[in-house]
Each structure stands twice: as structure tokens, then as C-alpha cells.
Image 1 (cartoon, rainbow over the protein chains, first blue to last red):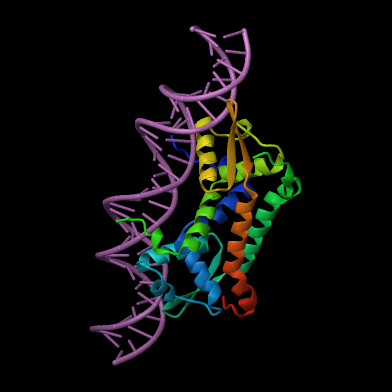
Image 2 (image 1 turned 90 degrees about the horizontal axis):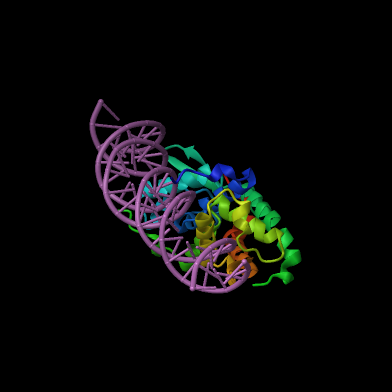
Length: 111
Length: 111
DNA sequence: TATCTTAATCGTATATTTGCGATATACATT
DNA sequence: AATGTATATCGCAAATATACGATTAAGATA
């Protein structure tokens, strides 16, 4: 019964939801934080910083990459990841367009 | 084996992730959009606007409420929901503090 | 009181996510 | 060539999320 109804919504709604989903786990927030704090690209040092197995971290990195929030390049035997800054700007823009109307009408809210 | 490792991360990381999770489904984005566009509180008209069963919508509303993104009050036989504007400000602040460092160092990114 | 309307909750089926160990792959080093 | 190191992927188990119909509860109306 639990068929996927996600495609019944607009592309914009789905995109915003996908962004949010990519950030919906503390491990992935932590990864983004690490990437943001170090200005050089990081490979598997991330694994050492997190309380998770290597395979699990790799999986989280893959999800962030699929969502477009980070990009990764292979550098010899290791991988290098960076934040995709433009993706976050897009996310921000989507959020703003969602709530712009609210900012104006906010004072009329009843609960 | 898939024990919940979420509590191994910081409170801030968990809070940001919880926010994101609440918005990680297009139906919930759509609900927020409806609440933002109408400046008066909405009850179950939301159900009519969405391609989902009443029980499913109710479940999504509950999740948004648990996450603190909306508030709801009972008005006779119906329920009235509103966006919790302060919650979104907090979310925004959390996002900004996550990426402030990146804004400065961005030009050094290597991939 | 009997009935209707609105919305929450329960029970259930299915889908997706999370996490790990094991394995595979790819480059480096000896 | 053999070994070591770094990472991705596979396969599996457990946990969570999604969705719906049925039921319940509470207020409104006949």
C-alpha cells in the first residue's frame, strides 16, 4: 500500500525535500561541518572524526554527493570532497521563495 | 545491528538534522507552502489540496508539529494550524553558523 | 437522542534508511 | 610480483518512514 506518492508533487517541492533529506541525519550535518571548517578538501579523515564505520561514512558521503551538496574527486588512492556552495544557495533561494509570503502576512497568524 | 547512533552527535547537529528531516518529504513542503500562502489558519482544507488520504495528511501534520515547525489549536470540531515562524529563524541561524566559515575560505576549495 | 462532520489514532503492509562486516578495486610501496 | 592503504560497493539485519482503511472521539446539527 505504501506506494511512492512523491511524484504527485511539484518538482520544486521534491527538490526542496531532497535537499532537506540529504541533511536529515546528524552524521551528514557533521560531515558538512568538517568540510566547511577545513578549507582544503578532505578525504577519509572524516572517518576518523566520526563515530561510524568506514563503510557507513562512505555511504553518507555518497548520499551528499547524489544530492549535489558536495563534490568528490579521486586523488590517487584517496578521495577528496568539497562542499558545493552553489547547491546551498539554491536551497536557500527555495526556502526563501517558500516563506516570502509569510513574512508579510505574519502578524495575522491566529495560533 | 542498525542501532541508533544519532545520540553520538552534538545536540546542535541533531537539532539541525531534525529540522531538515521534518522538511524531507514533498507533502510536508506542500503543507508548509499552503500555510504560508494563506494568512489565516487552515484546518483540513489541506487534505483537499493534497493527493493523500486524510490519515496520511494528519500524520504529516503531526510530524511538523512535533518538530516545532507548526502549531495547532483545536477550534470546535476542527483543527487549525499555523507556521511557527520562530522555528524557521532558528533553523536559518543554525544553517548560517554551519557555513559561515565556508563563505570566507570558499575560493580555496579544490574540487 | 440520533446522526453528521472533522480530525486523530490504530493496525497493517510495504518501502526506505541506517549501520556494519566482508569484499572488491585501485593506486602505492616494497 | 607481493603487500599495504584508502575507499567504494555488496549483502544483510534492524529500525524508521510512508500510506491507507478502519476505528475512535468530540463537537455540531437535526
